[in-house]
Image 1 (cartoon, helix red, strand yellow):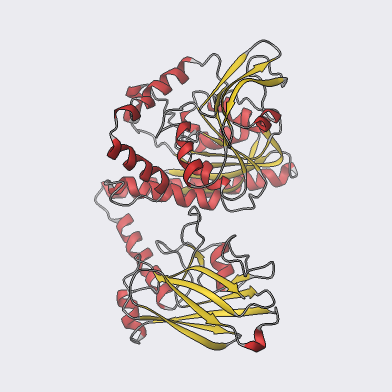
Image 2 (image 1 turned 60 degrees about the horizontal axis):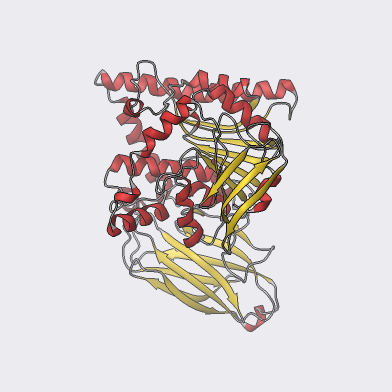
Length: 510
């Protein structure tokens, strides 16, 4: 921990904020061991940079700790086992077959990544105070810290590879920093209004008293703050408790209406909401009172009706499937047909499934949006991504990248004196492409270079900027992708081999 963490902490014993650090031992990054003492006489240990603010844990919390802790025994691992764990942690939430053999497990991680990027990372995080509740392996905390947030990771577990000690892997490998606090989510040890954003990913249903958890979150959120509920399971009538319950782990079976009751009683109103397949709930919420009561009620009912409609559809679909009707299969066939149709006519769409929405419309209309931070030193405030069909490959990854189907444009603010662009491209493994694939780079509408991509590896090329364009103007850079052979529309529709080209970097040099 760092000493400025005391600015937002409060004593879990007396509720006071008169805290000081004693008996410290620190390295060049943080205080590694110490005792944080309160004026009421209570003392709280700091070990491995983690402060423990849980003086009298409730019985359910003790049972939860015991239930999770036996799952990974770091002391029993040999060197190869520890290296495998380290690689897995750094790869989260993108696990391949070498790190996660179970296909269902890989799909769950992929869904978690998608939910996290759309509901937690979809916004300005630079300089924001963020609390990550139930941080566990800390991959979400590391991702938000990498976006410039001041993050506090909170969990009841500290054991390496499953709890807060795992943060050391990210701190050493990713050059990021975030605080770690061991505490109970029912009694958050922070002062009122300390955070701009609270994030939890599949943690709230582990709360023994979820009503108390939501009230605590409301207390520590600043005015205008947001709560992101991610990947929470929606229980259906007749569901059996998960097997983790036998290990003493709390697994609340919460239905769709119960979730919205918890939000309402906790003082929250949905701002965005999604119920996927009637089973997984994601919601971005604000505190009640930010808008007029009538508007908030209308918004809440709209989101609830949308989520409830999805829930009921999948209940009917699952019942029909059990009755040997293939409604869900037919829906999948129809969805795949629409996806192929959209890709065949080169409209923007997700790599996995057609998801019309705001981002789809923005790309279709070629509305500009700011490029990700770190695209290149040659970009400036005037730089914008334009259509068609651009979207992040992996917003959680430290290296920003974009993928296009057929064409894409970038308005690049080139500094005066720059003589060339450095372009790094590659063909994705997600799509089976006909080789070779050629990418034409156009500057101001004139072709400046052609880059041939034959293998999956990334290729770097220098593209000279014409002398007439070296005056620091805002330069329009266009990429046009074409296959090795040209085929009619119906042939493209048949195999639907979308053009998957990654753009890892475009930067300007002198």
